Image: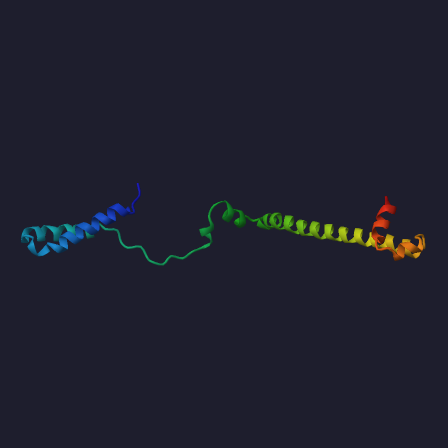
Length: 138
């Protein structure tokens, strides 16, 4: 299934190597020759080493996202991502401007009432001036 060695297999290989290295001098000459022949045979069947460096291309981004931006009309997809962001920013600015305009209109109504002299003189001296204006608006 998987050609890469698992951690368990690697651990076993290290243990075997260590045991062979530890007792290599005590092995009979025939066994040493057979092990040498087996090693040469294994090295002959071993695949050649792959190059360590590989050129990374745009194909690295394979899959839905990579294919999406590689299509000829990818600008349409980019607009599809950018448009909601721009629309959201415009909506936020519009809401802010609307709230500011509402505040300016309220202050203008208060100023107009003060300048038109519709308020009694005691209202200007009263600390509850804003409360009076709020009651009058109702």
